[in-house]
Length: 139
Image (cartoon, rainbow, N blue to C red; front, side, top):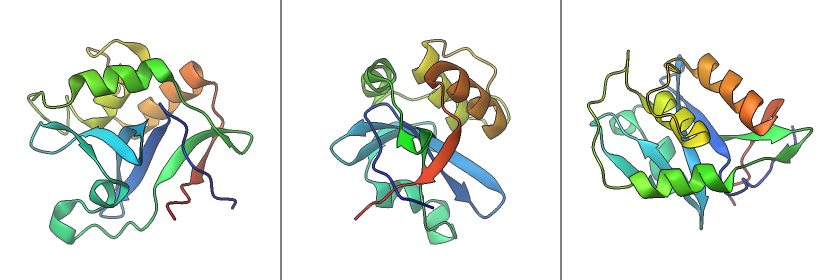
């Protein structure tokens, strides 16, 4: 699979512990905004994004929202993500998680119901007109 570099506002994700996914929004300058498990919205490097679960995460790649092999993003999503950096939410894996945050950045509706990664994928496909995920060439 060809590797890509994300566009500003691309949705990115990685596996957590091999059975769930973690998502965020690429905001440029090699930084991702995400909602971490403590409820903090923070801007992190790709290495910090993937190094979750106190080092127990087995993921080695980050995937990027793409259409026909080309990364797709939304400047509006990146702007919404940047505006939330430093704020805290009442995090819940079941009702207020990283996927809901990422979806809110895409749509502007932070009260959305996108809790599962599959929900976020549907929203990403609809808003950005994406049709696949490609591995981020982090080099």
